[in-house]
Length: 370
Image 1 (cartoon, rainbow, N blue to C red):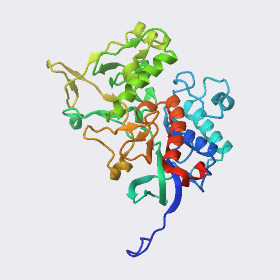
Image 2 (spheres, rainbow, N blue to C red; image 1 turned 90 degrees about the vertical axis):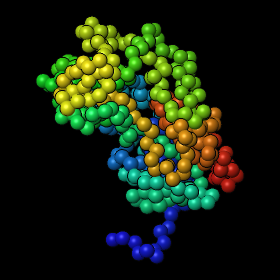
Image 3 (cartoon, helix red, strand yellow; image 1 turned 180 degrees about the vertical axis):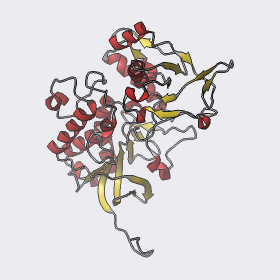
Image 4 (cartoon, rainbow, N blue to C red; image 1 turned 135 degrees about the vertical axis):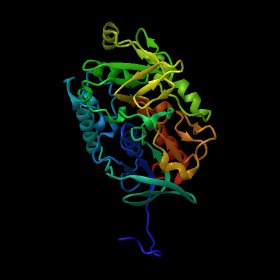
């Protein structure tokens, strides 16, 4: 049934709406409660996924707690408390279980599945339109992450390729490619992990836009902060963010050392075009492949914020605030998981900073300011 043209749809009013219930969104919910705001009275958390876990619930089956990058604790509850010490547990099981327990312990009352279609201005409030109704908020903490925005660069001839193309987002298991020649595109950690697995069962070729940089020695806290600062500088200048990995390099782990021994890391430069049967380089060299696996990263899932006109001509969003989570064009909006906070540890710290700054921006009328 459709609404009559003259029907008035009432919006639920909240002080703050958090969009997304991954690491960043749950961290924000925790800190909102600590400041005295109550779920479903003062703030609401919306999440598009059917169950807890953020993007972790969609990760490939071979990603276990042994192979995954460290899972950082959410504030107030350690991951080890829930997951135990079995490193063979699937990340797609252990992390969602941890998130679910976290939501229950702190009674965060996440509303799911709820897809936010758009956010727009309504005077001194923001209107949030979703597939489950309308909300009206004085401020928004957007924590939608990147998983729903896989990025594939537009190379000439891409649509002509007769083989299979897929993104990291769609990867399931290396055995799916048995007997096929797989071209793996990308120089990040995910590309390395999938190259390792797929090369165990079939022929692979690895191409990257720039030569990969392998980092020797430990990646300590100071090095991490320095890397995050480089990303932060870009978003404060209104430029599109680079990934943290792009400025840190790849860690020389035992797994990567073993790949070198096997001759798997024989990287080729990026091709210039895609042909019906494979790829072609500028010098005319061609390579026939069966599969192109794009490990080319993700972009921030912010399409629902387009009516707010937050982007600069550069395509980036100018960020401000202590940890660069506040949108300069509209300080009622914080982006957590964008730029320097696009990591599990960064999301935790940014969630706390975004809550404190947003409550301060909203002023004395906020329950948390009383």
